[in-house]
Length: 198
Image (cartoon, rainbow, N blue to C red; front, side, top):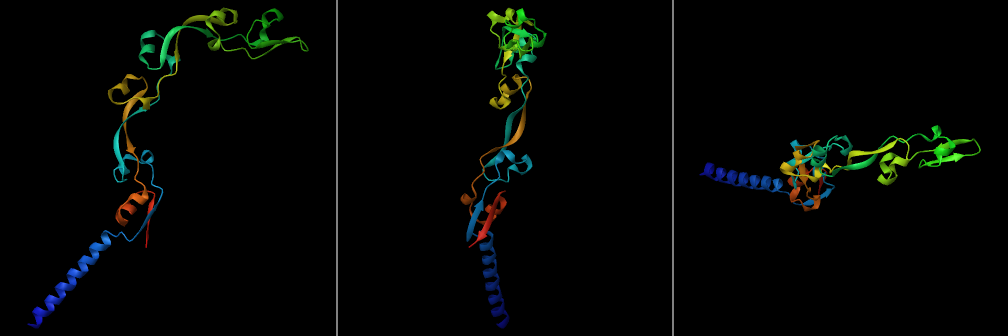
């Protein structure tokens, strides 16, 4: 009878101990504070462990610039680029101009004190087509111009259609705020958060 009594008491104590341990695992007696690490700055290997974040596909890379396309088909295939006739070339330097030519070269002026042409000639690419022939060194010609759309503006299959872009993986989402996390375990698992017992 004594053994059964002791076993009964021991069993009760064991159950009480286990219950106490369980309470520690879900400890909510405290405050979770801090600034959670943003999803985008996390490596994909630690992404899933951050509440509010998940690994997903993104369009990455750097799109080829419009001026790099030498023919119309590839130019028009790059979103943000346009093929057409534009003023191009390399404008003649002001220092090489005579008095007569200096006054016609946009961006140049005649410096009478030193009897020479000075200034910085306007780039051919900013000269209107109608005035192109007046700017020495410039001429009209077919050209791919514009600003290619950024890779992150594409998604899915459309990503690979933009030259210079590719599909990759990244950590996406919005990390849960520290104060929104439930208990010590969640708080301490969230990068950037810390738990303060009450």
